[in-house]
Length: 205
Image 1 (cartoon, rainbow, N blue to C red):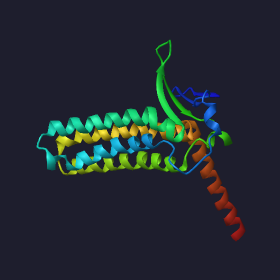
Image 2 (cartoon, rainbow, N blue to C red):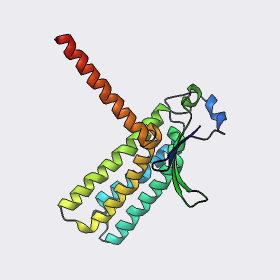
Image 3 (cartoon, helix red, strand yellow):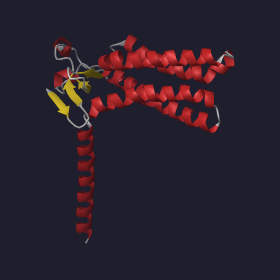
Image 4 (cartoon, helix red, strand yellow):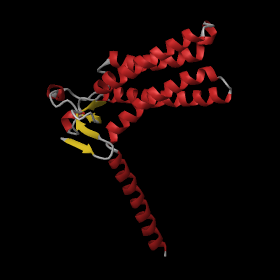
């Protein structure tokens, strides 16, 4: 099934219809993709560790900056193209059509009982914990570098925020759907809260 949001040229689609053979695997809490799980955390955690400790081991800012950017780039590619697909059944990407128009596509496996069995609960926790926690740390580093006047490090930190924030945003879009769906969810929630409050007021009066 294919749904296209005409406002921002994004698409929410089912992921990998051809991979039906994986649906027979039982859902387990154990880690089914240990290599993917390892590298999902390795590059992003390594970038943070190098940022925090590099000045203790090296006096070369250029060497530290290049190392961190390489780690961030490897993390961006691995999370965007590999770990999201294997660990939680999500993927986002961009393509340009024949008219030269750019389209953002956010994919997820079909929401069915069989498809849900392909996702490990342990891997899902690892994926979302790493995906959310590390960008938050880079935001903290950005404010720290700004307020401590470490201007030379600000560009490196912003790179971390942008690359890891992009993956976070992309996978949230994959998980909850398009911006239109987000708006509908928020409107529905507020409507329920207002209805509940009005019902409570009527009962008390």
